[in-house]
Amino acid sequence: MVYTASRSHGQGIDQVFLCGSVSRYPGVDRLLQSRLSLPVKVMNPFEPFESALNNLEHEALEPVSSVAVATGLALRGWRQHA
Image (tube, rainbow, N blue to C red; front, side, top):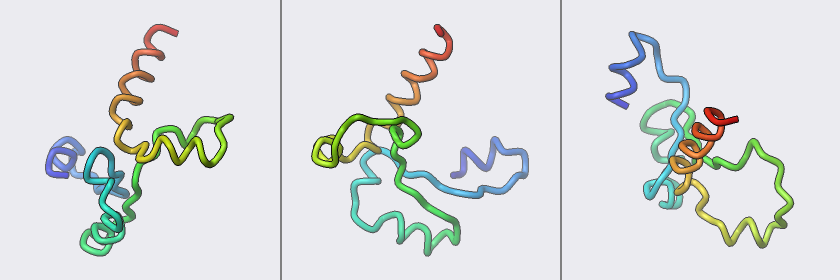
């Protein structure tokens, strides 16, 4: 958050997204939300996309937040080459 604040040129932070290993801890989003007084959400990088997977297949991929950075980098490369 310090890095984001240093790069935002005085603008505030509206929401926090958790990804990686910290997002695996149950309730960490609620804890941080109460401490920061900001909305906190565990990131699901696949949320914007339609999926043909059923609930059981989705559960097998959990926690998907751990692949958020890799998904973002892959999509950035896809947009550059599309």
